[in-house]
View (cartoon, rainbow, N blue to C red):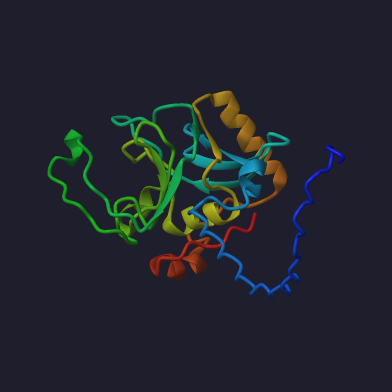
Length: 222
């Protein structure tokens, strides 16, 4: 009798495959809301800000050419509170933020002020990330000082202008330089004159005020 008989493998019973069930379409996730200032970064890549202390002017500079393309009146720090630092990058932007008195002697008797047009820092501000300095708006009582040193170190603009600056040129990531050199001041002035553009009136951007008062930042266009 043969001894190499192998056991017969059990028969595998195949069951018919179940028909594929249709997969219900899943709704696309809602896009995350963009943080203020963190948009396409097109204008942050294209422009930088140069604050010219000798002339109390804020220039928008084309990074590719190094030439100024726009200009606004500003109020940098006055003699007792000079603007500090030289190179910054905008870290965050704040709309209708309340103002809390800093721990400085000049603010010893000041009280907190809610956010709004007549806040000490205006309707909108951009944090430079150093020395507690901002580019910010201005209450009505301080508009007359624009174009000369008058702040405690920050760069003041009119509420209209600071909103327009954000809309067209600056946001989180924008480079900011502080100029104290007379020769560079002269170069900026000549470069801007060559564009044949006018310096902005402090009312330029007034169409953006209503939206900002309602808590809406203007949509960047750059």
